[in-house]
Length: 330
Image (tube, rainbow, N blue to C red; front, side):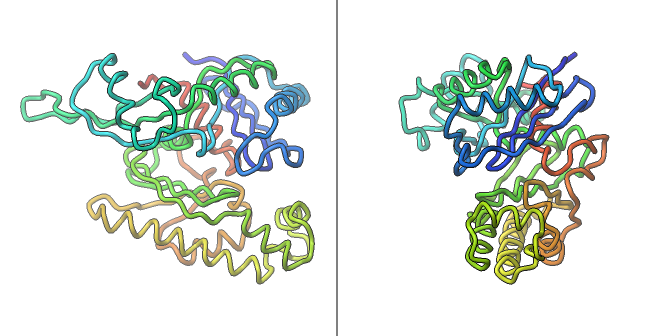
């Protein structure tokens, strides 16, 4: 049985730490980051981040030890692949070729991993095809995270892309057969489609909460840091500012397009439920705009059935990362 694990998700403005005991979430902490420590999803100073995480863990009674981290989208390539049956050794040789159009460095500088989503069999039961979810990340990137976590007092057990974390969350929650998780992030909106607990598609709209912050900063004549505080604290009714409201409508329209595009191309297995997470899930008029425009039942991630209510919208990715630790999956 999986033991204690600390799962981390480092965003633009907060570091999320989830203490998972192997059975449940014991504690979840969202700590505001110092200004400029993360820019456009990239950690600017690994040593400073390590010291911040070490202090945050100490102040909140979170034990050091085994840790997992959700990688930012910019740090990992992901692909859905269909390959003939192979051994592990054969897959290790062939997987790099599935990423040949994406890799900027020699394949030896990357680490590759995969999970088997489905084995397709013929009438006799013989496996004819393997459907995989595969990922690739620079070895140097993983080592930088490993060193950062070591300095903070943690031991990196595994790193994973967001799609895998959300899939683990949905599997644990016994969600509907085909659903989507809508991550309302700082730099973009990402719609992850999951079918029978497996990641199957992703759509990205390059429009995020950062755009709302910038529009609000311009409208109110303040800097972006202050505009961020206005937005999250709803200072002087900032969340209802016309400059922000215009962007809510555009964001809802992008989500609608993503859902409709998937449903048009998968008419036999359309999306039947959507769940919201990310910083934007706390902005009520944005959520209202999405609910009004997207023709789906929509709920916060914390309302996923199956006993994961500890995973409020802000902790969804970290909780999914922790849940993956308890699964025996390749």
